[in-house]
Length: 358
Image (cartoon, rainbow, N blue to C red):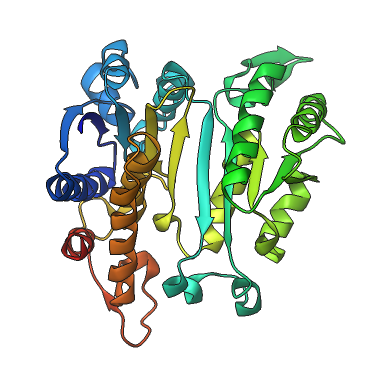
């Protein structure tokens, strides 16, 4: 196959991990007879520095003209003083909306080689951690009305959380379809005891559940879900939830797997074009030191091959190579604990170790 991939190298330490992911993609292309052409797109802080805008239309157009987009991460203290509309993170929100990507899928899976790195008790980890958070991505409070105003002589602020039935139904269907491909269990996470939007979510998901009789369906308040993810993560298979709740819970879920540096994600809409990115930030404090973990970005590239390009064997090969590197005891700083038989290596060395095992 011939595919065009838009690369957003991003800010901070992000270019280091994207570079390693591209090395892996090039090796896969050579091994399986594909051609991957790359186009550079700017978003976030690097776009602000270059264009004065976190996502100019010209850069969104590059992404829309590609078969998929691979992103590192954006943001950093350099741009924190800018107005909200000019901050790097606004570029990411606009990219998701511009590409029509309403479903963010974040797997929470503990690699057996890293079980000791989880902050949870061994008795909990041994029961298994393998679930996925399906998060609605372009609605809710992040895309609602935001304003600061004067009220009774002091500053006040307002953020709204709008959702319509069709937005909930389409993400809910992805949640049920994902559950059908896994262990056939889905949990809707909401705050229906307080929020009208959550009550609508619960009603729409209950309707959808009737179309999937094979899926065990249940509901859970978000505060209880946050507790249960730490207490008994093995109970979850697929969690479907709204934008802000999904943002928070998926970050929590990533940490119980040992390191946020191991977790990839995909963002998809109605077509095959997607946005693939690690869920961690740009880590500006370690930029240029060759110590950031590239595995989440490399696994994001594997998700791109699997879900956007239909290259299951190629995705499997990358995941097996990552597992083999971990089996060999190779660890970046975030997953290194000094255990016997392990060795701490840098970002580029981890990329090379995975390449060698391809």
